[in-house]
Length: 233
Ligand SMILES: NC(=O)c1ccc[n+]([C@@H]2O[C@H](COP(=O)([O-])OP(=O)(O)OC[C@H]3O[C@@H](n4cnc5c(N)ncnc54)[C@H](OP(=O)(O)O)[C@@H]3O)[C@@H](O)[C@H]2O)c1
Image (tube, rainbow, N blue to C red):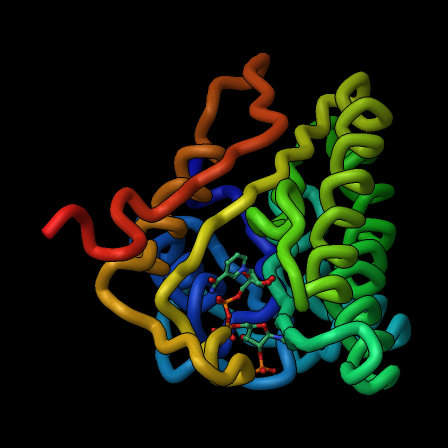
């Protein structure tokens, strides 16, 4: 079954997207990564397609190329992973950062989903997995723009699961706590560390979601580091 399934993952150069691409390829899935930069690995089941998810033309072209590679009937999954966060006080965060976060985290995810849904409807099955954040469940100070994007992902996902379930298409939303990735390169004062979640473990969760039985729909999954501060001393 895995061999016949094509999974599209956005944002594959590093972090969760890269780990998930590697894991799914190693298990026999065919993975197409859509991103601005290719990941530093090769696998016979992996193809990279250059795509900035904020650009509608590039998203549509990436889908066209994906269908040319392996046909449309094999396309099963879309993992909307591309995203980033910039934190700061409301009056200090540059307005362009707001727009760029919304364009990537919300509009990019919406564009990829919108392009793919007609194909999945044609196929009569599929699974869209959106990566939100605990910042999409619980707001924190000085993260208003990022929280707003991740709350939007939650609302979008909930509406879509209700809309698409009758077509045999699953929509799931994942809310990770801190994951040790390059995400924190853009956030002064927080360093990735061993107490955070690992990309490999998030990848494994995404695999589990893809492999639930046909009539089983997971709507939301919240995941957290067990001991974010390192535990009791
Ligand atoms: N790390 C965490 O603590 C954490 C927690 C909760 C949720 N998340 C979410 O998890 C997702 C993955 O983040 P990560 O932790 O793996 O961070 P990461 O290591 O920085 O990876 C982010 C990926 O998104 C890609 N990307 C960004 N903008 C893009 C665009 N416009 N078009 C295509 N690709 C784009 C990046 O590619 P290039 O920059 O190479 O183009 C990169 O591959 C994000 O949605 C993030 O919000 C992360």
